Amino acid sequence: MFRLWAKIFRDNRLIKDTVICNDCEDTRTHKVFQALDDICYEFDLGKPIWLDATIAEFKRHDKARFTQDNFIEAIDFDYLEIHVIEED
Image 1: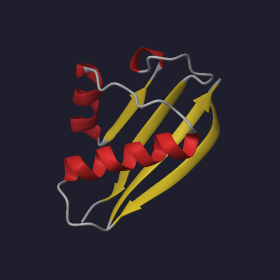
Image 2: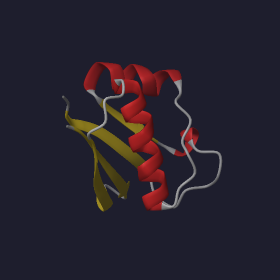
Image 3: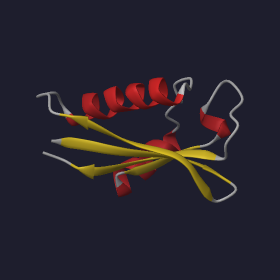
């Protein structure tokens, strides 16, 4: 089981969160991208861009923050944070 927790913060307060579960036999990278697609669909967001700093943070901590710099359109929150909470 692969689970990814997504949280949206504004003014240091949690606004929305969700957990995406994935049982398929894909690679970890495919599971992360699929979960991020599901998160963006659920939260009605455009897909964020993975900047080099975002990738490095995710590799180090299994956690990443997507700020306004990662989105093409304007967002009404401070950041979207994703965190891997369970892996196969």
